[in-house]
Length: 198
Ligand code: FES
Image (cartoon, rainbow, N blue to C red; front, side, top):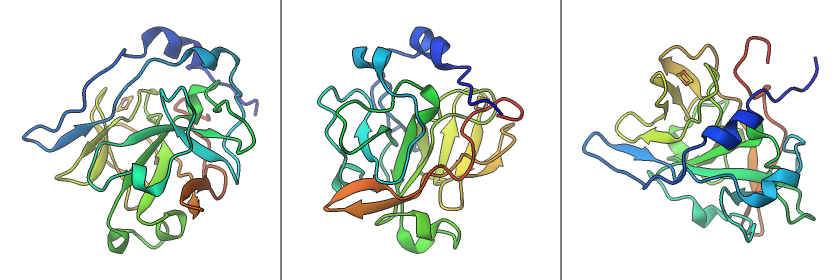
């Protein structure tokens, strides 16, 4: 099947500008949502590959993230993969957007543990329901949360759906740590996206 990216154009128009990190009484922690930077117009669209580093969304300096950049219990860090020899993230496709969270390594399910790096797990940030960004973390429930239609995903266990209309897990992106940097260990475990068959 062709590798389509049905949301890319729409993302450039509808992405929120900037929203503060919130940590309310309900324990909802939201990621910074930033506009797609100018370099996205010519950015690579290829899917993340083993050896890629990760760069925080909105970081014009494209500085590779380290494990220390992902705090336990905090809002998801939204990131793009980037070839280690390049200076431009793979932000040409919205489907490459990744959510990083740091969890208790002892709480990780057997299938998720080998994909984690020091408790940090990475998943596609594109909801499998209708493609909104999964940008919140409900600290009380320890789940990633899509605000559009309230789908919840358990990042400790393969981002399986625990509530809401999402039809499937968020694809995982296996990680490792090399010289302190977060590095992609293997491609997405499934195709990122939301439409049937995508
Ligand atoms: S788009 Fe995420 S729950 Fe509908």
